[in-house]
Length: 271
Image (cartoon, rainbow, N blue to C red; front, side):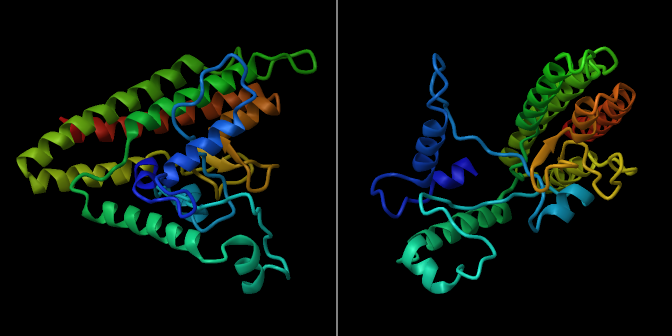
């Protein structure tokens, strides 16, 4: 999405793209990080729930995306005041950003449709999962009510290793795909693209998350008590938060198994 945002101009700031404005906003939000260099790229948030993608990602394991443009006007949601007059007066009087949002969605769809190799980046995905693992491990080591939340029982090394392996498999697929595109090998590209689609579904745990089996994705889900708010690697993270080390260890094994399934699928097609 960062590359798509680079391709669309910001309606109110000539010479700047939506990406430029996105990065400026992200840096302003992180201005309080004293002693830290400015962020190099705007963050892409994790998906929780509360939108049309919920059934696709959380239940079926279909890769999803949520896009939007927000600004200083803020907003009102599901309110009697949220009508066309209010929108034109306070949010987007010339519908310029509405057009920009349509351009972003349109360009993204066209690039997906016309891509010889689907832009599913499992190398970056694996590295992001490694970061999630680090967050949970740090949390597990923090004493709470006199006892840790599972640092001694969860095999964080296995989680990191599985995420690293997924990242390496993603890099291999990217290299293999570039070679197939250069060689115009349509049949092999089709097989590779199918694997890229199915690898996300390998991250589904058929038995679902504890206490809510409909939510089956091992990496992303809304929190049990956070409403729409996302919890990453939710089975492990929420068990750590609940100080349930046995459940945390069990959920970690399921996450490792899911990551290994996706890794194997990508490695097989990359050979």
